[in-house]
Length: 280
Image 1: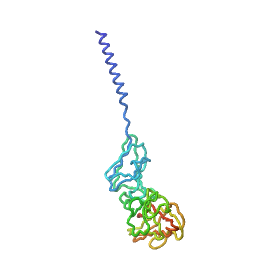
Image 2: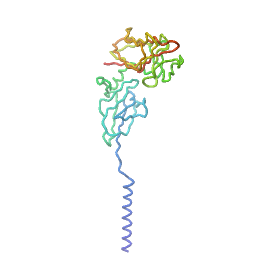
Image 3: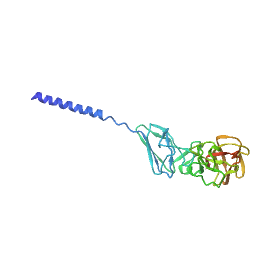
């Protein structure tokens, strides 16, 4: 009888230890999640947010919608959150450095009053609401042609293969491919092509744009502000960047392509990311 009880005890004890070993093998300790959750409670969409070289959206041009949030697993670290103002090429960042510790799920909330900084001009700082309202005009050539005050023979948006220059035979067109995005603005094709923008500014502002030119002869391309010629281009020019100061009040901007046609060839002056924004 004692022998039987001893055998039963050994069997029960072995079964208990086997069960415990199985539990240890099948249930490894949980690894804490390290994550950052960005919540958008502002009145603006947040395009392409990046923290510590981690993109929070799947594709360029995506954005966190108003009232939405997105969470990504990340490595512990500290960084600003970088993003572009929607419908603008201005790259900004949070003033606050966001730190995520190992095993922590950190939340960052955007509101209209979140302080942001212009990446290219650290003196340009303000709330998300005020910085968003700094942009007066932006044309990246991506959608429909914007309502300029006047457009004359020929002005339009075109893509890499020249689609959009439908008035002309593409094989007879000379133009540079778009600089940013999939499209740009073309002026030319004739000797009298012109684009004019009249805009009233409440305060001092800055105008900037990318430009490129296919040249056929003088007088080339003229650019004027309020009737005063401020630039003249009389050569082939690969994509370049330029800025001008604009005063408050009524401003008239005119781009003219005077050499857009020569010996059955159509030449174009290209513009991309035309931006007007308040500097105050």
